[in-house]
Length: 95
Image (cartoon, rainbow, N blue to C red; front, side, top):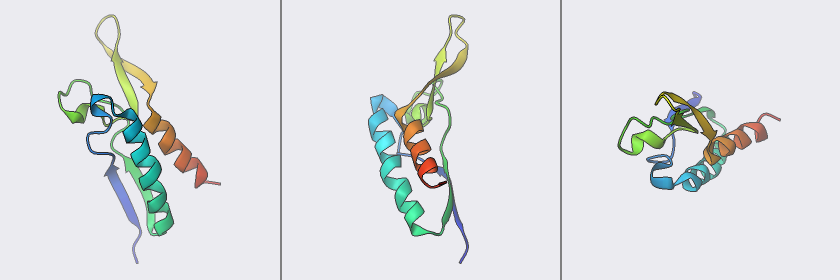
């Protein structure tokens, strides 16, 4: 009878090795199932930003890319398709 919160969820290895469409599709298919369950009250994507300093799939879990500027400093990059998939689910369930 208690609410369920998913605190770290995402497609395994996120969008590692160019799998951005697959990461977005995972969220598009999985999140509506959680909403339909009725007991799930929250889902937090792991994680908001990519971490390009890692070598493994850990580097690509983000919904937003990180890019290096001319001085090699990290800055926000573009929103990935998974960002928009996640946003669409949020919007469709907040109306």
